[in-house]
Each structure stands twice: as C-alpha cells, then as structure tokens.
Image (cartoon, rainbow, N blue to C red; front, side, top):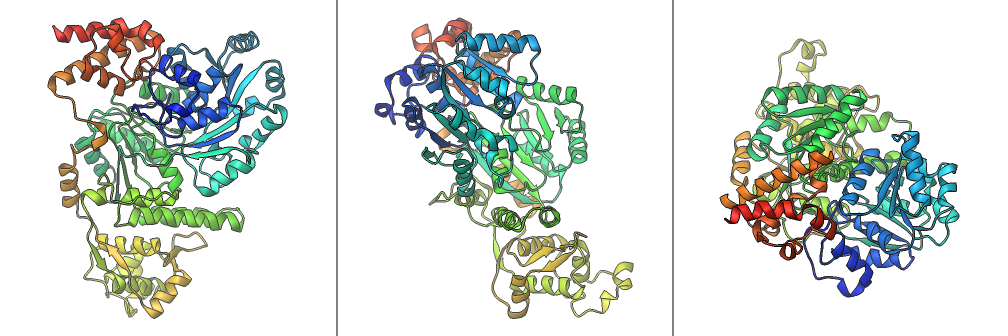
Length: 622
C-alpha cells in the first residue's frame, strides 16, 4: 500500500477530524501530503474526485480513509489480482477489514467474501472491472450500503494510454446505477489528453480534479546510448545497486530469458517474467521478488502494474519504452518508499525505428497514428536532450521545473554539444543517394567508404557521398542518425523493411541547410567516471545515511520483520516499510509511547509487533 512517508503540516485544518483520527490511529501518520486532504474531504462530503499523484504520493489513502469514515463498504476497482492481494494484505496488517473478489478465488472462498459483504463485515472490497460489471456482482452491491467507488489505475480507461483496458470504458455505469455514491478516479500517469478522456469515459465532468505533480526527486534518471548492452547493465548494477532489488525491462521475451540467464551467470539473483512462461513460473518470480531482498526481475511490460513493493532500488530499460507515459509509469516502480533509487536506460536508433515501423504498420486510424507519432517524438526528445532530464520529463506532463535537478546524468555530468549541421546533411544525403531503402548500418558503411560486396553490388562506391564521412567513427555516426531521427529529419521506410527515408523536414534541411546542435557521444570512460563520482550522492531530502552502529540495528530490525512476514506468508513491507525501520533506528524508541510516534506505526501494528521491535532496540542500547 502506498503511504505518506514524510510528516507535513499542510491541510490539517481542511480535513475532517474523523479523517485525521483514522490517519493517525490506523495508519500511524500525523498529517496528509499535499492534495491528499483535499481529495479525502471531497469524497467524505459525497463529491466525486480525480486524483493524479506520483507513485509513492499516497493515492491509496485518498479512498481508504473515506471508506473507513463513511458509512458502508468502499468498493475499489483494481486491474490485477496481484495488486488486489498486496492491498488487502497491507490493509489487514492495519486492522482494516478488507477482501477481494476475483477469478482466482474458489467457489467456497467467494461465497465467504459475499457473506461478509452482506453481513456488513467488510470496510473495503477490491474487485476487477470485468467482475464488478457482471450482473450478479452489481445485484450483490444493490443490497448493501456503499461508501464510495474508487477506480484505481484510471489511466487504463484511455484509448491513447499505454495500459488501455476496454473493460474500464463501461465503468461509467456506476454513476448511473448507484447515483449519489461518490466516485474517485486515481492514477500516477496521465498527460492532459489522458486526463480529458478519464473525465469523459467515466462520466466525471463535475468531479474535483487534483494534480499533485509528477516529480519523484528521489529517482536519479540516467539515459545512455546503446553501447555494451548487457555488459553496461551489469556495470550499472554492480557499481550502484549491488544486492538491491530491481526490475530490468526488455522488449522481447527471448531477450528477457537470455538476459536473466546471463545475469545469473554473473553471480546476480535474477528471474525472468513474461506472458510466455507457465503460470507457475510467473507466480514464483513474482512471489520471490516481493518477499525477498536482492532479487532482480527481468521482464517485459507484462510485469509491473501489480507491484506494490516499496524498496525497489532501480528500474532499468534495455530497450526504448513506447511512450514517456510508459517510461514514467515503469520507472515509478523504483523508490516508492522515498529513498534513493535509479532509473537507467540504454537505447539505440533501432529501437526508435522499430517503434515507428510498428506504428506505421498498425491498422489504427490516422488520428491515433498522429498522436502516437507525437509521443514517440517526445520520447526521443527526452533521450537526446542535453538539458536536465527531470525538466524535460515534467515538461511533457505540463509541469514546469525552473532549476536543473542535480539528480540526473545530464546535471551530474553535463554532456558536451557541437554544431552537427554538416554531419547531418551528409547523413541525409547518404540516405537519399542510396535510394531511401537501406538501414542505419549500411548507410554508415557507405558514409565511411566501406569496401563490402554489398556496396559494390549496388555500385554505391560510385556515389558522391561514398567515403565522405570517413573521419567520423561508427558510434558517432549512430549518434548523429539517432539525433536526426529525434529532430524529425529521418523516419523509417513505410513499407517496414528497415530502411530510412527523409521526411519533408529532412528534405528541406538537406536542400537549404540550417543549424542543429548535437550532444557529443559519451565515452565509456566518462560514463564510468560519472557513475563513480555520483555513486554515493543522495538527494538532500532523504536525510543522512546510517552510520555503522545504526546500520547494524537496521539490519537486525529487517531480520525480525522478515521472520514475522514469513510466519504470516506476506511480503515484509506490509508489516513495516524500510523508511519506518530507519526511523526506529534513528529515534531508538524505548517504550510503547515513543514507538507510537514513529511514522507508519498505527495502533494495530503497535499491538501486534511493538514488543518484537522494542526488544531488538533495547538489546542494542545495552
């Protein structure tokens, strides 16, 4: 469950006292994050709301607290069984009466949940959209008082979005059938277009909209040219995240399997996850990841939305994601606990061309293609910018960021730039003179004057452009091509054979010239130096690192937490987050009263676990 991890003094006066009582007594926090209190107040008062909050910003409390304050059961629409299970497990640890209805239940278990619901014995019920909209479920809900409807991961309603779920389109029926029951739609990822579609598809035109911002200051963004592939990934993990939990995303299932096997061969604990694996293997990978430390899941995008694990320390991409929304959603799975985390990505021009080809070959309408093409261009702009990554990322979502963030690769190791107009014109000429039907590698061979049978076969060694770029090395030419594509000068062959062609903008540039500032390719040595120099630098908001004595206590507390979690067969983080254990370590409470002041220790958890953790702390004090 997503929780506020930093106590604030905002909005206390604007939130009803019952809500604050639940926040403090049940969840163990003093005050709300910005916008949490406003959303909670709206829903408790019976109004509809839309909440756009970053991962880790406390979205779940926006419907969990009103469900406990208002009369009846809060009904939460959730897209994945794994996500429901995590939420229910976490709520039960706080003493909240929660359950889920989904296809994985046995008939007997389903009847048990329905009986508790009708008996008024549930504070919250989680259900998948297709299950909720089935007539038997709707008829069941007709018989009970409902506190609210919460539509989690509401971006799934958007046809333009990266996780579109057709079942979400029918959820507008809730407002018609259950008139007067407040509804709240929540997501971490929604640009202006997606937000408009959430309003339209869910019939929430009168809802209060709250956008809390998209910044995740604890995440360090690093994007590099595809050089070294798996070896570069290994160096990143070894240098910065040895022994940490993380997710590595790959585009193809075969790549997932190969990468996981290779990482295991290098001494790391990695497991594959994709839709082509047997269900038992996928469940094993998921359970291992959420229940143990230091596990790396190598996966396609089939893995992630159901992950509520707060201590994922890194998310890595070995291929370009489809959109900035996808990138933001996937990288947001790192550092949900607010502690330092990394988002690392390696990509090449082949990734760009593949995305464009898939879009061109799709049967989607022209409007959809136009929107998606704009999203690809925005993603390439993020990758190729020499400016602050965070500024570019937040700018896409309409949020300004005035100063360089100081926590991305461009801020920590500013790239050099150069006037690349002449090189770009040579690249465009080579593409044109070879017939606009060859790929990147071949065009570069022509530019560098390669002596190959293929070049001689097509007589391209007789072209004016042949050998005109011999002074530029292959990696630099790849960078030029990639940035030319990012600038909209090159595009893939619409026939889908992997060739390059000039766009209208590219034709104009080749004909008339112009200026274009390119970022210089980073050398491997400079990348390593940057990683080394910034390895231990943490955002100031995180607080000082633990010293040796505190570190030993922290690990002892984690050990107790693991033992308690295994005994109950739940993930360790549903007992206490690492951030809560760090506060225990720093404050070293000596009794029940002082333990109760730790953020994240509510009344029920204090009764259940307080003695176990106080015992360990006292042992370190003697």
